Length: 315
Image (cartoon, rainbow, N blue to C red; front, top):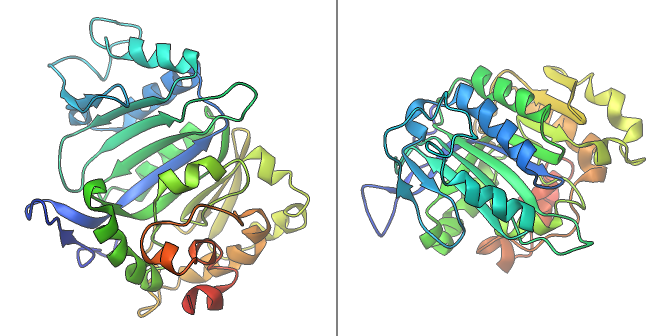
């Protein structure tokens, strides 16, 4: 894959760690969070991730990362409380409907492996707002990410999801990061802009992204506005649309791309072909992303860029 090494800036807090870089991201927005589902997700993820992803753990929204002792985190059953004592807390919070956060991380400040399970506090009779997110070094084999996504999609009741290159940033310097993400997003159209604090509460209303891999959940797949276009998605050159669990998974090409508007990659044409077809089920209302996105009120323009490119170009 083309190296995105140029898309890196040092953190003002630590020049040896990045403020902003490109990595691979797989995010799946779930209809709800349940213990059997996230246990299945962890079991699947353990087959793909290197053992050192079990270096640090965060098992509550209220505490930071702790270093894990040596243990057989790859093969031990998740019910083994001696190996996974922290999962009891996650099960308890999941069942209670409390805000739930679980992360494992290899501890590397740049180009790291990590997994996150997250849900906002759930109110009775309201939809749940939850996601699974997996980060990989930018040069991870695309076939591995695609295989993991396909397998996870068969076990998660998902609303939507996406995978591909993503702007990764130090959350302690979010404002500074988004000041640079904005001009990069203007140039690199296939790199995802992540602001989950803004997006997560809206994910029951529409899809956020058209990416290298795009999950289309059953709710949006059945939307009358999308029905006439479904067959056309299968005819996009280089694209594959296949059933995946409760929905469908659209893959645009064999590998993720940057979508560099200055040095056009041939694969970018498939993104522009998918844009008008999926546009009817993309989000039309969302909290503005940080920085220039909010200042120019153009987050929705970015979301719809592959269907209405002029609006994003002129934003």
